[in-house]
Length: 316
Image (cartoon, rainbow, N blue to C red; front, top):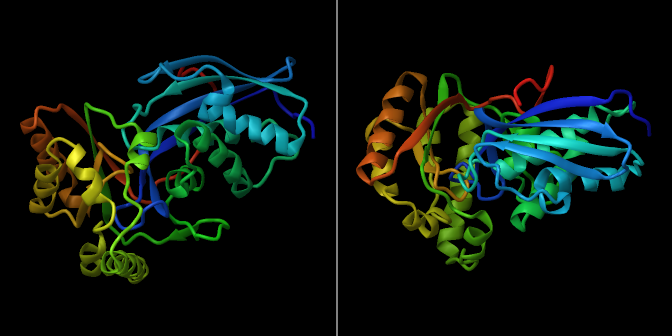
């Protein structure tokens, strides 16, 4: 396989992992923030990271240890490419924020590299490479962030694999994401999870997920609100987020349909009607303020697009 161009730049957005009710299976993209990766064809026949800038520049420069680099290595090996890649990364997603930063870098890298090929792969075929990059960075390869970052929208993964399913999003809903000024290391957070649950709790979570999917297809906002809860993972993780209970209460008291952790946290998201988004964002930030944490709020469509090509790398 040959290369048809020398350079490509891609933007991959942040994502809400788990979406409360679908641990490791459900996620959706948001408009911003996101990561930008610039890929250039290089004659050295390797994957080299030239530069990492932005809000999180203290990342591994060794390609094997970096999610973008590891994803490209997996892609090169699978396709038998002789060509080398040099890449530059601009991080817009803070480290340890629960917004899928490692996944975004991996997705942007393989998407940009794919644009260099004379016979590009279908976008769904890039998923295993992006997951390999995620695994290198976090020690696991949950698909809940990576799938929407690559494919866009609200995505549900099948446990047996295949292209994650696109779920419809009821009209006039938005997502509010509030990221406090603290971080949680994903690898450690996953290692601390209790993997044994009472049957009643597992059954309840399965029922909530089934009802949530039905609500999305029916456009039933009341059913969606009653289903957008996490009785499985949130109870284990929320105690490590300063002020989480107050932030969640503030969102729900401001007419949120549901509110929970984004991924492993500390970011917290809420789904709501578009008309309530600004009020909910303000209430959530005020609650974090009362816990001594500054925060930044984002309001986004729930069915936001995934990775896309940029015209140039002037953003660096």
